[in-house]
Length: 280
Image (cartoon, rainbow, N blue to C red; front, side):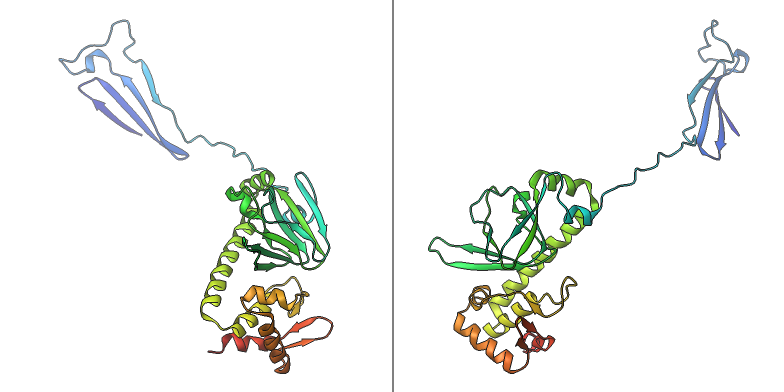
C-alpha cells in the first residue's frame, strides 16, 4: 500500500496494488487539524473522514463467454443445394450462359469442364479459358458487373453449383473457409492471366500449344488422373493459343511422333511435353 498527501488540497490518496488488476485509488479528506494552513476548509456539514472512491478496480475476473462453434462445412456447401444455391447439370456443348445475359450469381464446377469465350462485334470468337472441377466462374457479378462479359459452355457433361449473388456475398463475409478458398482461386486466376499474356507475347505457337495441353491436363491438380485431357477440338485449341487449326494439327502430329502425347480413345499428355515449354 502507498499513501500520499496533497498539502494544497488537504486530500490523502491511498493506493493499493492488486494482483488481479490495476491500482485501486481512494481519496480521503483529512481532518481540519491536518489541513495545510491557508487552504479552504471543508464544509462543516461534511464528515472530516468522508471517503470518495475515485476509481474502482478494473481487474475483476470475468468469465469469458465461449465462442459459438461454427457449424459451416465447406464441402457440404459446395457439393449440395440449399438456400439460394442450386445444382445445374449440362450436356456436352450446352450453353451455361451467354455473353450479355444478366449476371445473377457465381458458378462452381463440381465435375466436368467449362469453356469461357468472348465474341466481338464482327462475330469472331476467342477462347479465354478452359476450367475444371473446383473452379469458380461468373464472379464478375460480385464486382458490380450487371451482365455476363462472355459465354460459358460445357465441354463435357458438367455439374454446376449456382450460388446467387446475395448468398455468395453473405457467405464470403461470414464463412472464412469459403472466403479463403475464393481468394486463393482469384489469385491463381490472376497469375494464370498474366502468364497467358506473357505466353502470347513471347512464345511460339508450338510452345503455346504445349503449355495449353499441360494446363488442360491439369498437371499439379489432384482432382483427376494426370495427363488425361477432356475432349477438346483442334478448333478450340487454335482459338486458345491464337493460331490456325492447320498449325495445331501440324504440332499435334509432331508431339505424337515424339511420344509427348498419344491417342487411346482419350488424349493422353505425357510429362515429357514439358521439354517443349522449357526449351529455349
